[in-house]
Image (tube, rainbow, N blue to C red; front, side):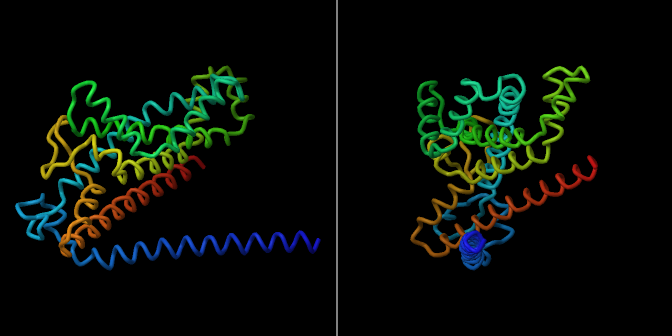
Length: 282
């Protein structure tokens, strides 16, 4: 008993140390971003596009990057979700459990999840060259959709595996088809988990820089159509942070702070919607 207690206490200490280290790193990152970027945030920075000399420290803002990031993040997440949910339903409802095809598909999505986003960017750029399509918002949306597609599939898939088999068998016993069971029973049961998966994917979509560097391009204007190039907050941070002008570098930290605030607001809204759904279900 003493050996087991010692092992348990040892791993508890390790977990607490790991948690503390991660918390310290996160706090340091947030404090550094707020410290360097808060003083550079202004209404003109949020509600104006870059003007002449903006990257030399003069007037203007990053409204083009904010709007471009939202366009790209929302559209790519919606597109990836539309294609992900049918695949997950097939894996968990229509295909045989632990079959070779099912295991192969899950392994494939795991591999795709681990591929660096710059590889997807290169793939997207190759498609652009093949079809003769230039850097644009549309190209960025397609590329980011490929990036977050395996994230949504595998996250929702793992959540679906937690649905009790008895609930599924009860649905079949009442005469429901597999499609009805998948849509009306399983999806409804794990809806809060689906919202979480979509949020994770959106956070990666709006914060990715490598995949859109060659595909979405960059523009100081707000994209008016899918064929226009689009700026994003990660690229705005990248370009401004490499400037030798201190004021411009501080604006990069301000852009990073704005990106964090956007993701935080979406997280809060998602948590509120999830809690309301759970109360309604109860």
